[in-house]
Length: 128
Image (tube, rainbow, N blue to C red):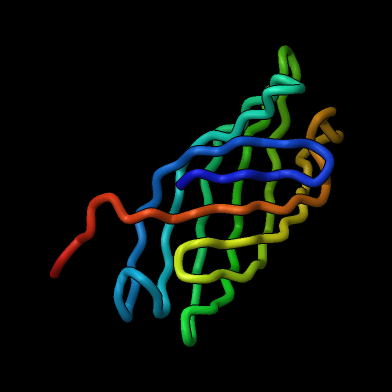
């Protein structure tokens, strides 16, 4: 799952997702989990992440909701962030808005508001 994320900062992300789609792997309704890492090359911030999500489609367009947990690390500073997300999608491409809830004080290089563009590519389809 490659992703681009940011509003004031740019993050590049890469992850792997396990999903279950109820009406086929190219659409329908489904849910899943993603693990991965995001990286801000300008501010040198790393963020391992886990995401739980659900989606629904009608005529290729759909909406999705999710919640993510990030552990942002920058040099000697670190902060856990919980991020509820909501978005829209077309086939396997999603655009999500998220609001970061910081466990402790804000971390430089991490915005409260964020947009994430992601693409879910099927590598290993699971057949019944």
